[in-house]
Amino acid sequence: MGVRDAARLTAAREAAQGQITIATGMQRTGLSRSQFLRLKARYRRLGPQGVLHGNRGRPSPRRIAAAVRHQVEQLLQGDVPLNDHHIRDLLAEEQIAISADSEMVQIDASPFAWLGPDQPRLALTGTIDDAEGRILSLNLRPTEDLHGFTQALADLVRDHGVPWLLYGDRTNIVVRNDRHWTREEELAGRQTPSHFGQMLDELGIRYIAAHSPQAKGRIERLWRTLQDRLAAELRLRRHTTLATAQAYLPTFIHRFNNRFARPATDPTPAWRPAPHSLARILACRYQRVVRRDHQVSLPGLELALPPGRAGRGYAGCTVQVRELLDGRILVMFEDRVLLERHAPAGAFSLAPRHGRSPSAARLRKNDLRESRRIDDRPAPRPSPPAPRTSPVPSPHARIQPVSHPWKRGRWPTKRDRVRKEIGPVGVSESLRR
Image 1 (cartoon, rainbow, N blue to C red):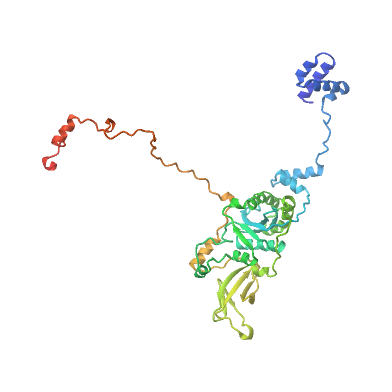
Image 2: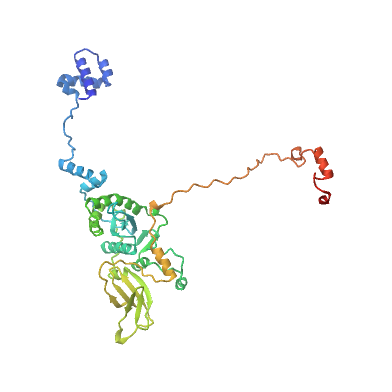
């Protein structure tokens, strides 16, 4: 029993014995007349127990079960910090049906220490449905590169279909930001797209480049959420390598979509079916002219073409060399495959092959640039002070004439008259002449 309950007990007992009036009891306890009368009646019926609340000592019917409470305590006191909302989502089992699709998808990458502050930074490349807020694909890469964007597009098209629009930033992986135009591009009136842009063109996907991180706010907010939830879950499940973290991503995507995705206003699906030649489309393209020795070359690679039908040769012909996402290399002429080279052994990363020319060096420099983040915004600069201007005279001000005494010179003194007659003091006659 606390101090307040003890004061109420004393007032109720004295009022019941007739030692104090109702008004005095009201003044001591701070209760209204009706409240004090009910308190006095409960004391007469139950004794000192009537002063206490009826639910005192009773367990709440909404009390969390002991097993769930123990699990929550373990999550709160564990090594990985989790907020209360994240713990609620991890414990809850909700089933939300999703049956609508959107025609615009946002794509981006987020460099972050996903495996913990003591682990190297990785780039998480992903796509999200703009209408539903549903994660469509995620993949981890050591850096933000062409391979990560192509893999995200491959997972998107394979699992869901081909969207109509793709919305992202102006990273050099997707769009060209250089001012170099070749003669062929000037004649065509259009710069040749980047390797990723050529993939989108062949798939019939229109790419819209945002001019600021705030314009693609949905996927930027997704990165804020994943940097809290996904990073915490990877540490909670002791995923310390890129391979194990990548294997856990499908489970996280399913839970995230069940929790946060919402159906679109228009339930009509807008996805197009994936093409059968998707593997050939998702590739880097290089135009080459076959040499007289029936070979084509790429930076660091020589390819010998087999003879064609009836011993036909392709010397002088322009062929297209494609390096696929899995590492295979195709040499194509008029949509026919002339040569297929198998993928190299070991891990492979799709990257543009540049030569040693100045334009290639400029392209290599552009490929190293990462997309801008909201957190990369420069600090606001203080505005320069406004230039001082002369005061504008009032239109009602009176302008004095030149002959006004205020505008005349001072009256000449005797010294001025002497100087005017004999000249400056100390100047010789020759200089005066």
